[in-house]
Length: 77
Image (cartoon, rainbow, N blue to C red; front, side, top):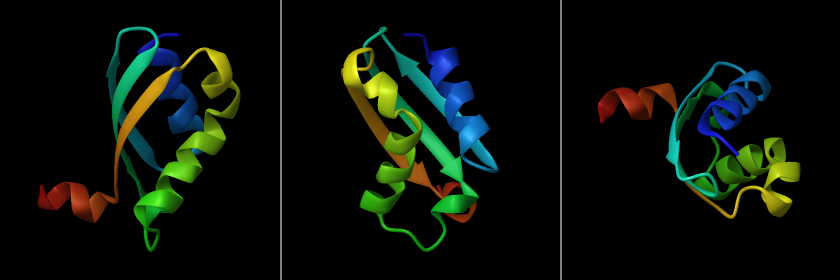
């Protein structure tokens, strides 16, 4: 599994999102900025991302560490 595939899949399925991802082929770390995260808690945000990568999480992605932010939260950091 490569980072580019994961990045593109998330960005295509979560409207107005921007993804920065690194990994070793099975373990990944991602910073995901998305307007769909507005008003959602961390668990709800992660569920959104996992729903996009549902099939990949079964075998190809062993671990995905995420930082999920709204645009406003990202701009404050």
